[in-house]
Amino acid sequence: MLPVVADEGRVVADVPSGLLIGGAWVEAGDGATLQVEDPATGEILGRVADAAVGDGAAALDAADRAFGAFRTLAPRRRSEILRRAYELTVERTEQLALLMTLEMGKPLAEARAEVAYAANFLRWYAEEAVRVNGRFTSNETGQGRVFTFKQAVGPCLLITPWNFPLAMGARKIAPAVAAGCTMVVKPAAQTPFSMLALAQILTEAGLPDGVLNVITTSSSGRVMEPLIRDPRVRKLSFTGSTEVGRRLIAQAAEQVLKVSMELGGNAAFVVFDDADIDLALDGAMLAKMRNGGEACTSANRFYVQDGVAEQFAERLAQRMEALVVGRGTGANVDVGPLIDEAQRTKVDELVTEVVSRGAEVLTGGRRIDGPGYFYQPTVLAGVPDQARVLHEEIFGPVAPIVPFSDTGEVISKANGTEYGLVSYLFTRDIDRAFHVTESLESGMVGLNQGIVSNAGAPFGGVKQSGFGREGGPEGLEEYLETKYVAMNVGGPLQ
Ligand code: NAP
Image 1 (cartoon, rainbow, N blue to C red):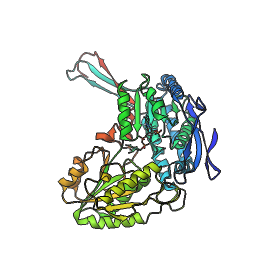
Image 2 (image 1 turned 180 degrees about the horizontal axis):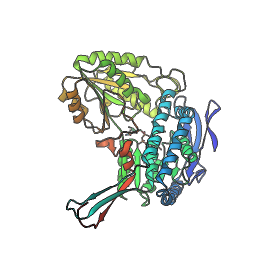
Image 3 (image 1 turned 30 degrees about the vertical axis):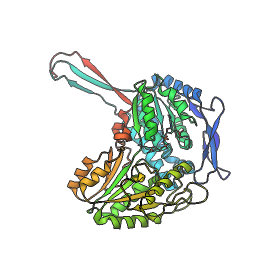
Image 4 (image 1 turned 45 degrees about the horizontal axis):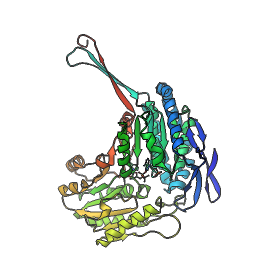
């Protein structure tokens, strides 16, 4: 273990920098490393092992070897390991939050909130691990019985993105452990430290060797594809872009792998005339600016009814203009940098395109000069329906506003996308709330609130936002198979 994370020459955290394989922290087979950058400064924070194909294979060997014993470990023991990991995560909030802020850029307050969110998955699934049940019933004829029980699906591959580097890991690892699965986890190359720190915690909490294996690599495709095609793997859970998800689904088809896909979003944020506008503005700030707009759940399109559209746009612009942009470690900073220059260029292109189509910039609209990948919080009014910004995932601090006049029109606009992760709806009319909620084509709806994330609830999308759910009892089912026994028992159930 090396002190790998340094800031301005000062070591800020002791985090393992190797690969976790079979319970040991090891270097990549060829000794290669990859560097991790601070997106707020462009400086190098540290280096981690850069796995090659052989290292991936070794990690899967370890997960496969560990499965036989782990699947039969007492559920209470698995629960206790998760509970201990929850406690250690909470104890280390400050260290984990700083790591996350340095490698990903989000302000410390948001990083602390992510630590709490991640820890909650460990606690929730500690509680679920001892409640995996089947059912027993009589056949409809009265002759024979149906008996079902749940079994761990097998060794899993878990792939996570950079935007929530701790929580996206905990959201997969915790239910997999609760179910009795072993796993190979691959975090994003840009943010490996948070996952390595989480793996360290789970190891300290008593997770047996080989249950959790972590591979960091700059060659994701080359290292993961042979694993996805390996018949020993029984489950792939991926969080990331729809583009990569599509490719992985195709690879997973070869072994008819059980797959969960948490992909991109294009969330509509709908405000009706009758809404509580203060509440809608609070919700808009949360839905748009949590994680600086780099969230799959970020409000991507604001549809605001004619009667309040102007007022809403002006007040949202005032709130956005007041945000303090800066390095996430700074006092009172509200918004950090974007993850890299490619992301900032994409955001800037979307803004340039919509302005060329006649949209009005109410605030922001430009990149911020100097080191790091900063972009001004931006509000755009008069956005035409064809603008790219309404159809592509922005992943940045940009809020395009489109007025609408009636319910049918806004439902059709909100559903006019290939994505279907989450929608937000603000209204005080209960009939309208039910009608619109039921009509929206998304896996989740925030009704009069700008956040849906919750360890106890099923998070996930429809359409090209993916399939499968994370969180709640549904999240555990993703790691379980149901076995049914047809019992030859005579006579009706007494
Ligand atoms: P990404 O480029 O799709 O990468 C996600 C993960 O997949 C990373 O670990 C990446 O590794 C890996 N990867 C890339 N190509 C791969 C390949 N050919 N084979 C195996 N793994 C591969 O997405 P991102 O830019 O990190 O994350 C942003 C996206 O995630 C957005 O679209 C966002 O909406 C989505 N997201 C969805 C949810 C949800 O719950 N629905 C939550 C958070 C984020 P490298 O780092 O090495 O490229």
